[in-house]
Image 1 (cartoon, rainbow, N blue to C red):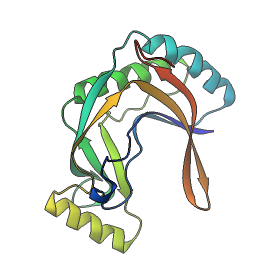
Image 2: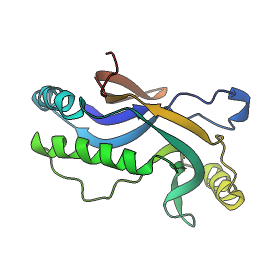
Image 3: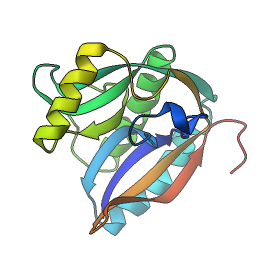
Image 4: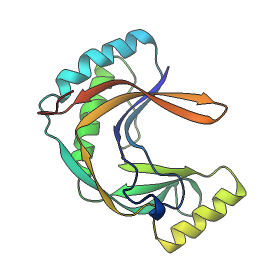
Length: 175
């Protein structure tokens, strides 16, 4: 299955404030295609690795693009307060992924939620306008992290569908 680890990002409290699709998760580590035995090993490893970590909050703010603002392919909302806690959580997930036998990802972790991918001329124009204005299509808000999810990503005719395969609560959070 095509999989990744993520924290959930609830839709904005005011749906009218969102100009476009609302982000649903922040990816901690993309895995790509993994076999069932690897998934089983990751499920076994991650719970104990996260059980002592306290829940925390982060703040979504601003807007940016990969690979750059001049050549956007992915437009995202960044993280301000809580960035270090997210980076630390991503490092813990990464360590367990590597310990389970998957290759390390040399790319540095950049805390963000994807707002949209640039796939057409219209998307490109929208991205350039959004990046120039600096006004995010999703308002600044606080997100509480209590659980890490292992998610499956399946492509369908209607688009990509994400399904939670396993959940790993942080310290003091009931499953």
